[in-house]
Length: 205
Image 1 (cartoon, rainbow, N blue to C red):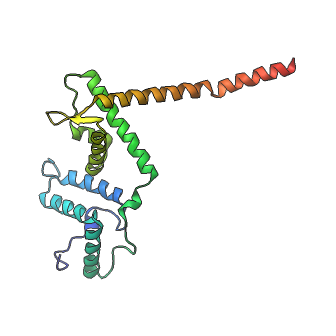
Image 2: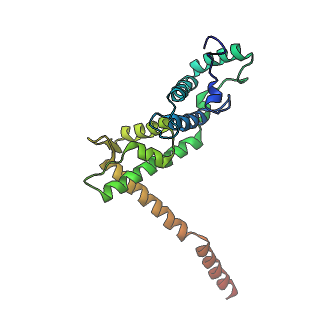
Image 3: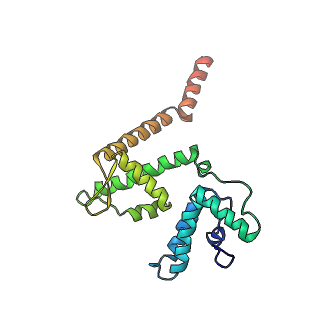
């Protein structure tokens, strides 16, 4: 990237705004990496795939991104954006809640697999990732968490499978959800209406 001819606009390459957050960057990378991957029958492009990987590796790192933006300014005569980006700004309570839902989905998928195929309980990782429609880094985070909690394990075949502790987690969650549902049904509008009718009848008497 010493001159304009060698310089590659990573933001344009990934079709993201210069001030995009970490989540948007990951989604864009996943999309274009899959599109240009050498194994892709119709859209394979080794050179473009390499550029996409390079772009993501640079832009996801705050320090390398700052260095790239300085070269962007020198090459194009203007900065790609006016304010810096802190990756952690994209992580909030909503993200954490979404992660919890994804963890529950992964465990439920693996629970169903072990329940129906106890002798072959594993699921290939990329298949789970496709079902969840998340980036590789997001998926790696979810798997790291579940493995660290001993809720899932990697089989000898390299697939992912739920553990006994994971099964207990699914069952406990199901019981909790069922209890909450029954409570809501028991204290719902119909019960309130019946209670009001009784009170009204008592006052009329």
